[in-house]
Image (cartoon, rainbow, N blue to C red; front, side, top):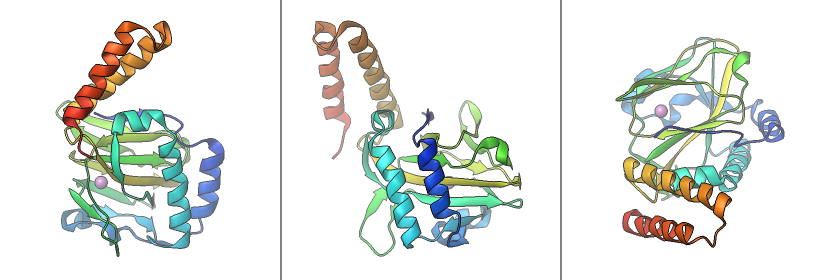
Length: 227
Ligand code: NI
């Protein structure tokens, strides 16, 4: 499932983040690449472990924790600290698949990447190219969202970033391990949760059908989740 999370970050948060990260330190993006990615990737990345990266990462992580849509869709168990990248002057990231296992450098924090997320930090009319293109069995999905919006997509998918031919594409990106490994099961839970929210808004939380469906949601989560 691919999902847009509109306004994950407010305009003020985007502005604050940009003034924090724009001066850098920016380094070669291949610091985080696996072997195959390395061949395809030409971009820069905010130096991991720098003070700036830690502060910026905390702002994005805080926004994720406050987003009911993100939590409902991702059912996060472990979230990799958000990273930041920039593409300009023709930089691009060719077709690749993200590594299944990610370790945070210098720690024993390890995740299985079930979902990938990109948070756009530049307005789409400020740069040409730079769409995230995600492939699935329905074909290719091109994603280029307003600053502050995020897209969540299966880490298992082949994806790429088109060359940026004008301006700069600046984004945060990260992976997460979901409590529910299967994309299909996670999607069913998300759809059920949305339906229950909708029904609750119309009939109130005390409605017998709302209670029955809420029980079903939790029982399915109990069956499918790891913690
Ligand atoms: Ni990727």
